[in-house]
Image 1: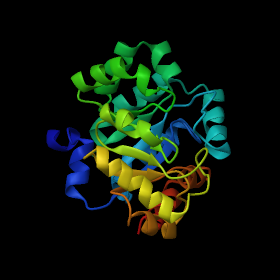
Image 2: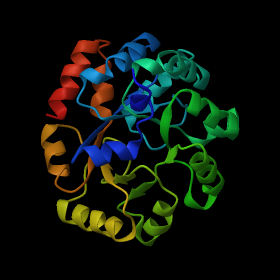
Image 3: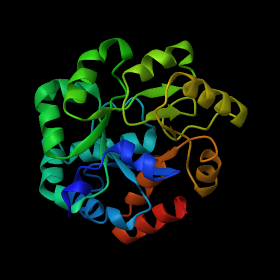
Length: 257
């Protein structure tokens, strides 16, 4: 695989594609071998970017299904090092950008500098840190920029006048939460969603990807009218429950057709 492909950044994907498909898996669920084989077959999916959740005992932004998957992976002793070791082992097999969804406690416990060092080694292109508030994100944002890793900001329909501040530290794209509550929650009505997206556009030139509450192909096609990218988490994790690579890829491709 060429060095050019390995070095492709998140922003490059949004420049190349009019609408970007982003998916999510829990690392080590249903087992580490499945995660490895899925990543090695990522080019067979309709996904342009893959978000990988590092298992955590208290995933506050995630709904019941993803929380349970994270719990089971943790119970199976899938650690941050397990995830890094796997990604470093197969990074030359992967040409699409990978980003981590990781809770700050895990980063802090690992050591910020060491975590970022390992991210670079594993060719991670961005981090989403749901429990890192804007007021405490300056150090992380600066260190990530120095290492060419995007800190992807999360904004929601309830962020209001904080949106401008939150996105000011962001890179790659803006993760717009189009629902109330955790992953798998119901989307807000479309008029409010449109207003929300317009509010973000007023304060940032970064691409916007919509997540939370997007479950099927109809949802995807609707959300593509409003945002540059669409993120699906819960439905994909549900597919992985079968521990069947071909089934998972088929269902993902049906979601984003």
